[in-house]
Image 1: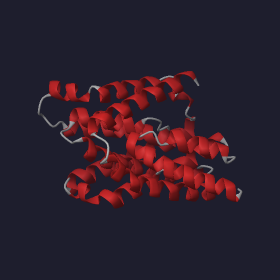
Image 2: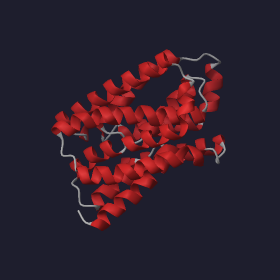
Image 3: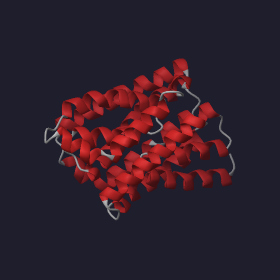
Image 4: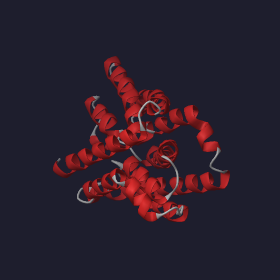
Amino acid sequence: MSAADLLLLVLAGVATGLIGYLTGLASLVSYPALLAAGLSPVAANVTNTLALIGIGVGATTRSARLLGGRGRRQLGAQVAIALAGGATGAVLLLLGGNAVFARVVPWLVALASLALLVSPRLRALHGSADSRGAALVALFPLCVYGGYFGAGAGVMYLAIMLVLTADDLATSMIVRSVLLGVSNLAASLVFVGFGPVNWTAAVALGLGCVAGGNLGPAVQRLIPPAVLRVVVALCGLGLAGWLAVR
């Protein structure tokens, strides 16, 4: 891999980290960058999963105080579910490939994007109840999906949390970054043992992701929550359309 390829991946990693934190659509930048650097689709997929851990690392170093207020038991349960889900998804990917998701994923992403778009109304209909039990149940299949395929997982997480819990957008975004990073870590441990990880590409992209993820919370504070929610939802609908026609 040439120096130009490595520079491309570092810069793509910064963009991936920032876009991934703000919209949850990190792979829209990172996956094409890995393909452009010469990786095969399978190698790009598993290498991308490993590198995306950097977003959670970068975001956590910037906003750790938000996590401190959640309580160890609650955060511990979420992390355990994310680990189990990510590892399960990675095993399923290695056993069967990701073709099974080709038809259903666009609909999942579109549904989550629409739910995110109207989440204030859905939350109002839901009432003041904080259904964290239901959110925990929904977290496991989401993290399985994150380890298996992952496109749009961040949008799906935000939709679930903004509808089922009382968390605000800023808190949901930082917790999402941490839990999807944990899910990616679990999947990566499986891939390291059995998948074709390109370590040079993973390190270059991952370092950029740390920087971009660290910038994410600061940039997010400059954008009104209502505007950011609409932007994320519209980006999710665009991803759903792209996945449907590719």
